[in-house]
Image (cartoon, rainbow, N blue to C red; front, side):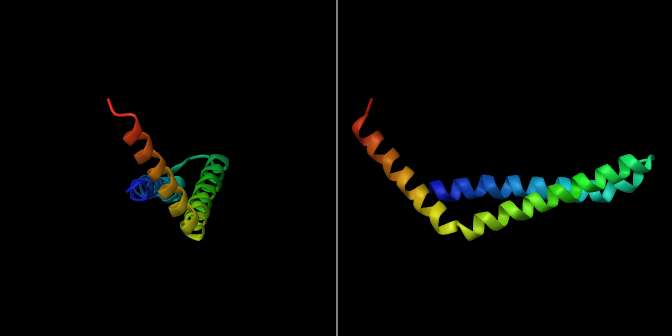
Length: 85
């Protein structure tokens, strides 16, 4: 359950991250000065590459993340079992 929750927040974050990069590329031609337009395109491309990199790292280390999430979930269950109110 913990892994699915973390994955959901990660997917939402990556969706927002990639959307910002794509919107930056889409709207960069509307910037009047050439230097600002180039900076906007460079930042948008860097944001896109960052999103792709973090998505790759997530999927390449998926098993380790699942293992850590299971350990944390078990630790939380044990803690809640011993510390009842």
